[in-house]
Length: 203
Image (cartoon, rainbow, N blue to C red; front, side, top):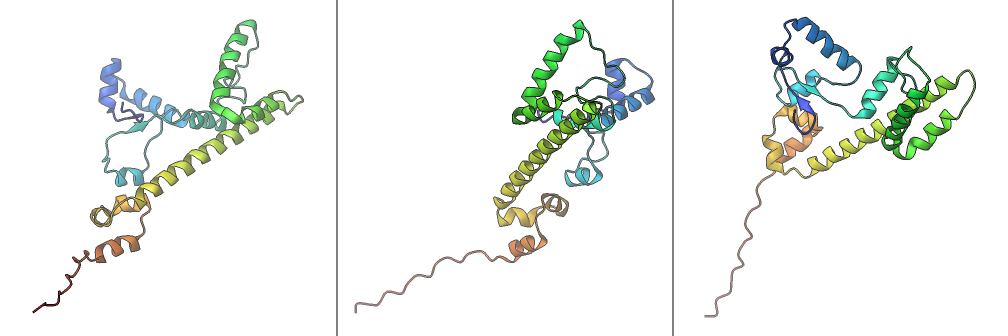
């Protein structure tokens, strides 16, 4: 796996590493990991833009994305208990404190809103907690997306005309570089050297 969380093992490689012969089980397991948000797969457009070919590629998403997906498909509730497995006991209290510490770190300044939801009572308490947590996670993911877009836009503005002119069209499209900018780069003439001023003869 690369530092950015991207890996590209084949089904045969996974089967060999795990000592398994049933490749269909591996495919089902990977599909389940993708469904639950533990892995993401690139879209066809992303593959084309980055020349990924047809090799299987998987990326480990951020924790906010995984939690959101698990909440959306109702695998966990707003307090992060697994579906139909909410057990309150002496043994669960220590693990609850660890979970809350992790959420406090993850949600950062938004954790106070989540705590307020936890303090609620009534028959719809569970729904309120889940809705608040989903709203916080979606807000954080939007902020990440906007930050990434701003970073890409900044990188695009730093590209010189020669780089834009030579850039493959699918990458230019993925970066959001307008066609007019490419045409401008192609038509731009190289700067001519400054004309030398003619000195008057003293003779």
